[in-house]
Length: 232
Image 1: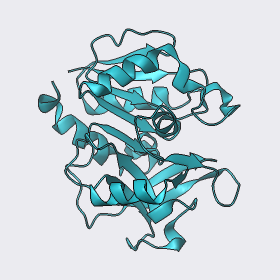
Image 2: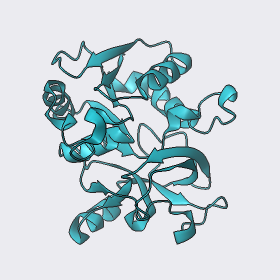
Image 3: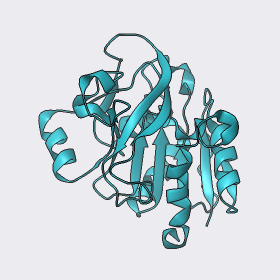
């Protein structure tokens, strides 16, 4: 089993991801440079948060053209696992690996704060240790996290149980007050229909250790590690 973290110009959560995975699992974690095409035999690929190519065109719109993304798409098409966090989620949507799009936050401002999430789909590699009654406190840091999809796509996501997380308030109530960016149906994370590609806007790698005064994000990575044997 091997984890891979793709690094784009402007990635700023790659080291956080590498540190998180290395601290939770003894499995190797390798860096994958965006200009390369060799995935180095990894089984589970992560696209980290940050501002790939400075978000100069549209978040993730340039990164999707990086040479390594063709290899990532081929990996996913074969059933390989891919997870995008924050900017990584935006890249997955731009590259067509996940449906929908991430628009500007409805207040048109960059938001950096802790938010609350309610796990919804609990049968996935990244959520299998979570409970439906749990409320996770996870930080966000984005200007374009407002999830949007047309009515047909949104219905498919809901009907197929592809919504992984919803924004909620601290009591677990899914409401407008708990929605930080205007995302439709309070969607904070989704998966593809094949259930092997995952995306979420909040940053669980920023809350995995006691030194960060929050370990809620660790549960997501522990879910992945618990499934290591079934990934290969």
